[in-house]
Image: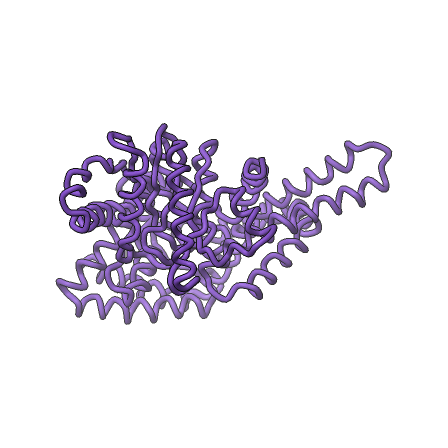
Length: 439
């Protein structure tokens, strides 16, 4: 019951924080039978929450750090929403590891009831675009579960790759790339003969399948280069291939191509990559200094950078301003409280979205309750306060699109106002594209 209530409640909040949420092959999770979902783990509690949101009505359980299970209400609540405590040596010491026997028994029992269990196969949460080595405990748990379920069971392991545009940023995107199932029974004969070799064999099968489902940057020193290449080329490349930029699967296909370009050029022509990094750094620093974005300099968007376009955008901003002002009146306080408190509480970016989403659920609910109570004082019926709350929420939703539109309009104004800066940036971008073409 608690799980269903939270799921419906959070389904209103997730599409606010993330502009686009999409899953591919979600049907593979919604299948009958026991499933262990092996995922990468860039974004703390948000990772399992989003996959639960996408795979509903299937309930997905997952393993989480056992030190979060404080005795009492917290432990009870976490268990009710499907979280199984697991201990690492650095979290609970040897005593904690002993408790893992209970956790594995609970996992086995859940699988026996055809449940779906998430395992974060890397064993740690870190926000980056790469797959880290998988933990050996993953395969041991999988084979242990197979033995518990008995011979000829249909236990499958499902590789899943999580891809965020910017995991900790408001109005970014999240793409869950679900792969094809791996059947554990295919490894059992080898396991019976040599368990250690079978464990390694399974991980060697699982790892590349997971890697294929994410954008994997080989060298961490190239992270920024990939982000810059993405901003410079991704949308143009999507258009060239006649793909849909709103489809996160198409977005992923192109971003993976661009990532592989960086991985390849680092090996084949490191001098070229070094030159790109230097020029890209100068270009993006100049953009940021003047509060501009690359799309404003992109010649493919030249038709948008005109006085006529600016005029019509300003008209639209004026027409939409009453709704935006209403959105600010009705929603600004919970929004700023959520933002400021999350930034104050969270020290690691991996946890930012999780706390922001949780705080947003609380503050916005209290906000609308407060508005209802205030409006009800001036009404003899219940409908007008409900209508006002609905209007405030719809205006808040409108504001999510009004603000980016306003920011883009301001960018167009800055470019038109400073032609000299535009020409300088245009030439720098032209040189960068020339370098990229050599990749």
